[in-house]
Length: 105
Image (cartoon, rainbow, N blue to C red; front, side, top):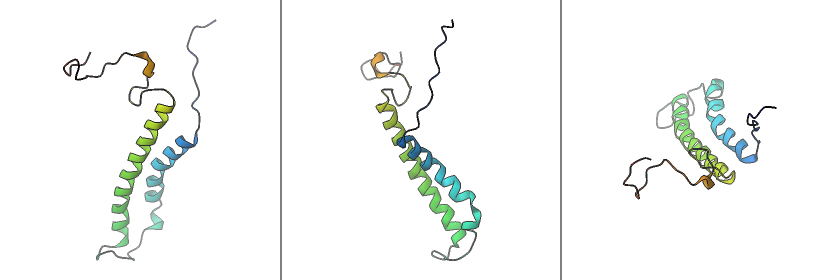
């Protein structure tokens, strides 16, 4: 018998689907060029083609932040640290804290 650790399969949850949609939406919206390849309606004299893409820069930033926050929530509900992926119950941390003067262990 092998003592190798068993690989766990990722569980698809509604939260992870939402994360995927947040990250995929900008790609789909901007790769479908035919949907915005036109001049009208212009916004302050700027053709639709340009302001639509610039709008997606802001929308993408908001969606990426939302996906990150959802990922943190997903990691917390799974019982793991949002950064390292290790269990909070382990008790050891290599992060610098005010107690040790900011020096990493």
